[in-house]
Length: 202
Image 1 (cartoon, rainbow, N blue to C red):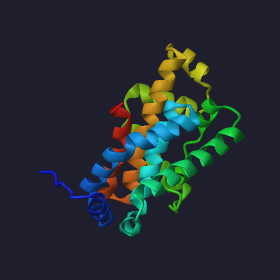
Image 2 (cartoon, helix red, strand yellow):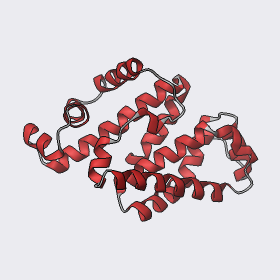
Image 3 (spheres, rainbow, N blue to C red):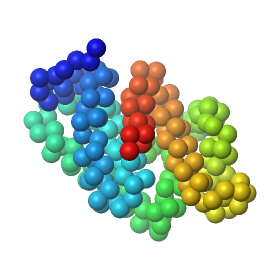
Image 4 (spheres, helix red, strand yellow):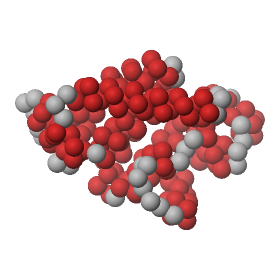
């Protein structure tokens, strides 16, 4: 049975204490607002969805400070805006949005404070790939690991570039969720799945 919180302060205190159900409630309450801000600033649905994931992941990682906030909405707006600005800077450095989306998958972008070796990262990445549906795994390997362009991958797989784009987005999100759960521990699995649920709800 879900707990009903009297006000936002109680909800934030519950999240701050590590309550995953409360975090899911907070996510549901504010994800559309974050998405709207990100979409308006990036003009990209895919990028806006990824920003929603990243913003709420940062909130969860820094949840112990939530109970100290007096204006969560202002904090959330500022966090979203700053994340969008950082993303736009990366996009500008890569010239094209498509290139950025297809080639910027790094664990440092998801968990910036994580200290891991290259060997650990490759091992977990391979485990994540092993769990993907066949088509998603093929697309991920062709584009992320072999450096193929979207059109080249589409020609090899005999599908449209839009189909490749879709499978790559799904693969990225599944791999991201897997890595979050591994690097933050098993208790983070539900949090990862909440964040992945961003994309299934639109």
